[in-house]
Each structure stands twice: as structure tokens, then as C-alpha cells.
Length: 237
Image (cartoon, rainbow, N blue to C red; front, side):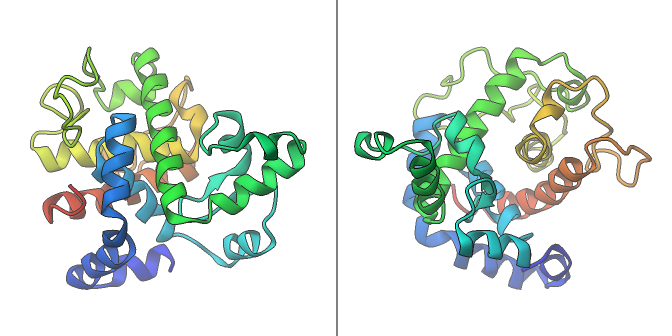
């Protein structure tokens, strides 16, 4: 799948593609959402956005199990998974050295359930970093004002981070799309969170003249539209 093909599909076909890819893993989405206190639809959007933009080079990396690459459904960099412990590694594997650990993590990231949990951990990390830097330009242009208590809604994490006043947008779907744009851009270009010149959101202001962090901002905008569609369809809640 590629982005042009995905967005050229009629909406009912696109929604069917979303369901086919992730409905079998709904329990894992909810478990990872609850454990990491992030909305399950946000995790789903991150995964679907990556699945919708996997090219031949990405598949080749997966096939060769490359140690320093992005692999699996979440297209997570192995070095990111290693640095932040997004994949649990048994002690016997650790004892074999860093290279063996990297190979183990690479293989595990190609399993959908593991990829979902890894993506959820990375989303949590990014949201925490954004909270620490909420006045930085990328967060500021999204009007990001995270809840003071992340588990303010108890065990129900479905609506965290996009309540009125927490992020740009007038209605729930628009606010969720803004959250997807905010997070997915950072998922692909993490330094955008602390950048002084991150560029302008392609979702909030399409076709702007910004050139910095272009890859992340395009991913963010694409993810926003995917997120809006699954939010309206009430998928993966």
C-alpha cells in the first residue's frame, strides 16, 4: 500500500481496509491504550498511517531484518525501540550482547501485537515530552494544553488529550485530528517537539511554504485524515 493508493480508495473501501488490518487486534489496542494511558484510536491511527505508507524499501528492510532500520507494522526504528525499551527483552537475550538484542527486537517488532505495544509506549513518551515542552512552537500551534492528571477519566482512556481546551479544534473529530497531526509528525520526526522552527502544520494550514521537518509534517497531516475517518466511524474504541 502507498499513500496515493490509500487516499484514492472510496471511503467505504478505506474503512474496510482499516478494519481488516486492525480489528483482529482490538484487544491489544485496548490493553496497550490502558497500560500507557493513550487513546486506542490514536495508537490505531499511528499504525494505519505507517501501513499506508510502506514501500518496497521498507519491505526489504523487514526481509533482511536490518539492525538499524524501521521495521514492522509500526515502522519503528530499532534504535528507538532499544533506547527507550519499547520492546521487552528477556535476560538470556541481553546476556548475548547488543547485536543479538537488536536482532531480537527487530524480529519482535514484526509481530502486530508487539508493534502495537511499542507504538503505544512511543506515543506515551512523545506526549510526556510535549507536556514538558508545551510552549515549544510545534505544541503551541496546536494549542496543546495536556490534562494536569493524565488518568483524569479513570480507566477510560479513549478521550484523553483532546477534550475541549486541550488542543486545537472546535468539535471532537477536529480535535482528534489535531492530536493525530501533533503526535504522528513527532513519531516520524521526534526533534520537531523541541525545534524552534518546526514548520507549519500541513493539517492546520495545508500547502504552506515551510520546508523544515517536511517528512514528519506530511505524515502528520496524512495521519490526521486517517484519524478523522476512524473517529467518525467509531472504530477501535
